[in-house]
Image (tube, rainbow, N blue to C red; front, side, top):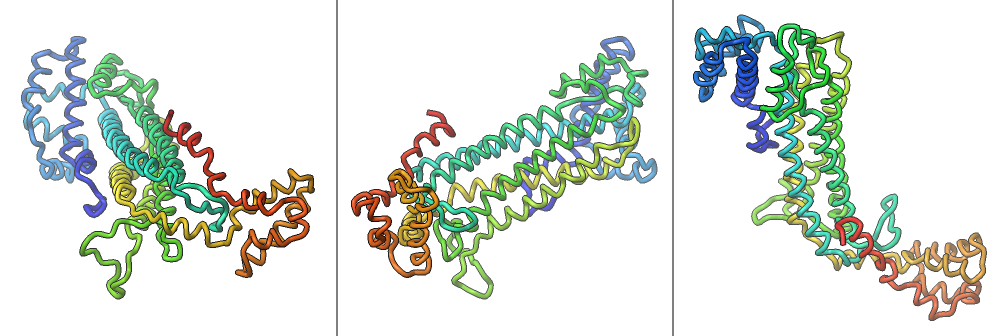
Length: 434
């Protein structure tokens, strides 16, 4: 997590002060519940809130204590006692460290998910605007990187909109997956703390009680969360890669916005490079790289070990901060993307009409020829055009086998670009609704 690829709102979730504030709230809400069921005095629960509610925790002091205790939660509790005084003896009653750590982590992941969902909403709005702007802007569709048949640039954007709509649904589900709380004590049996305490803390922290914890919240939940972030990152890379290809000099159908005073190369003043989408490709790799450690965290020893802890201290902030930045950057790229319809038309015309070969093939089969013969007749006229030796329509008209089945007028009708775009409205209705 470095400032270059970070945004303040997401970073704040992972700052020590935020973490300690959440720890305190978990402990204080637990004390409220303990007081309600008569385990500790109600005035003590009230004093705990009063004496620490508005405190700014001394991170350096906590670190100092931890250097002695070698235990972060004990260090925090020791520091907390310095504010609370004698009533601090009721803090952490019947709880174990994982109750605080795991519940806090899930609070942070839920808050992070809320930001990511908001990020996707902004991206979807930008994609939708560009999709309708270029709904009927013809461009060449490519398979294997080779010209295939016509599409529209709006359809490319509609595909991205549908994909990121699925990403949003996945993030909502991932948020629900980790929105659980465990206040169940050592090995998760509630031996020293009433389950009603967990229910109260969960409600206050916006979570649900974990049905069964083994001192830790099961890590399959977190594996699913980070796997979802990896999928979202892959969708970012897919759209970024498409834009990178479209910006290639030989293609130049779209390009990233190039601001006044921007420089593309230290050596070549003419360069306008797709640096933002290349950056997004790299950031996506980082987020995906954090998925495997999350999956490996699922298999902990017995009721608990801490092999997952060091991993989550890294991937929790890094994955969410990086993905937040990437989604915001992609939104900016899409919003300001420069589109060149004239170059799209130029590329459509580049192969001398070969993009209509399937229509000719199908028309010949409708005239009674076998598919094999139809394919052979079309292909033998297409290959010279591929080599730059003529115009496809002209060659077809001159082919005696083709002209025996299709008149010149019928052949010309088969080269209508609009034929390929007749169902664009249908696709848009499916994606965006009628």
